[in-house]
Image 1 (cartoon, rainbow, N blue to C red):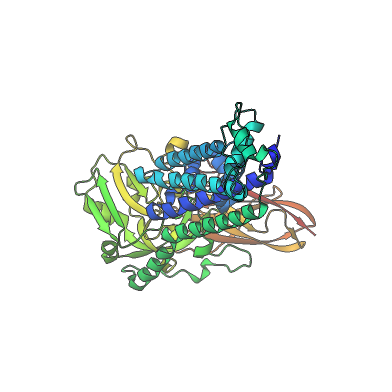
Image 2: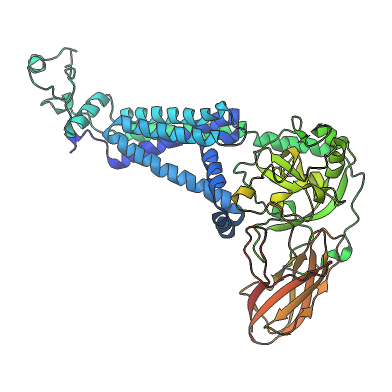
Length: 562
């Protein structure tokens, strides 16, 4: 029942909840900007979801959404929060306390998620709690604004409509400010009090659409301004300024890489280039918000099973002799023929040299590196110390590391999948043992060690393409980091394998392009590719998913020649 027309329409109640939710997120964002961007409730809850995601579901998300998986997750959380906020507005339509209680619960959920993040402190609960308080206040103010000055009467009428006893109400004053004699006599009469809005002759307090809409517009502006302020405070803009400052002080390599051979890139239209531009380099990590690290405050602590713990500043790192290395990185989540692989020229300090200065003890077999966002990675000690170009990298393709790829410093270790080697935003390396410590992905079902498997991919033609019958160019890339690719073969429709032409490569740590020209007859054709590495191993046809230690099988495409 709607007593005297005083109950707010459902659409309006939902709108008050949505605006209150937006203000809550905006307020939380600006407080998080002052404390830690990762403490924002959406990010904290999203991080908790990522941590709890089983390996199979993670693979599905990467396979389905690719590099947009984080945006999809955050967008999904925002949609759920919007639906919940609208629902709280509808609950508050019946009783304001319901909406307040709901916002308090979600504030506690956000606070608990923030506390669950690595290196979280007590202050990390403040964004969620401040957001919940701002949302509750906004919901109350919007409700009062929508119902004019008769909020008390509105609540009383709502209670009466729900069958609850109504509290005694103050008589409505006349023009001169005094209650009429009739009102006074009714007020003094025994029996339950009647809400003023329901008394004969009293003007009912009606819903005011205009006041609600103007109040809602103000709330949206406040929410947007708070969100923008939080983003600015989070340091994203400062991070780009810091990158430009580092670019001016970046030293030249004491040991430059050998020039890339002119024959390393076959320059076939549509074929993946030998060097992957920074903007196109794949990104797979758990950071929902890219950490913004001030290089002036960055340090790398190396401790654990060492004789002399080391702590380096960014300035210390740049003073060391830096070297360049061409290295192809691969994500363990890469499906056969997948896109999560890229090749770049890296500049950095040799990690093995820094570890020797620390004095690694004989029993150590694992480097547990820690990212700025708390993610951990376990790298075999023997791999880093065997002479390969394992780096603490500060630049990529001749430019300072992009923030999304680990600015100011990241690890690059050839021959290992990224989840056990390529820590971005690295701040700590604990020298330890595999039987004492576990890295982030190991307890989630992934293998503790991840050597990259020999693989190949067809870039041209792509699966499902239509081509002109006759002479056709097949082309792609193959990789077997730190072993090198010695041969690539192609098979069409089950015919014998044919040797492809290999492009040059500057060393064993990069991929190699390949191509093969052959005649295709009209009709559908199935094309497969396989690579053989420098050890003589030819990649297997046996299919296996990425978990727990990398996918296997042959990349195969089907095309139609016309």
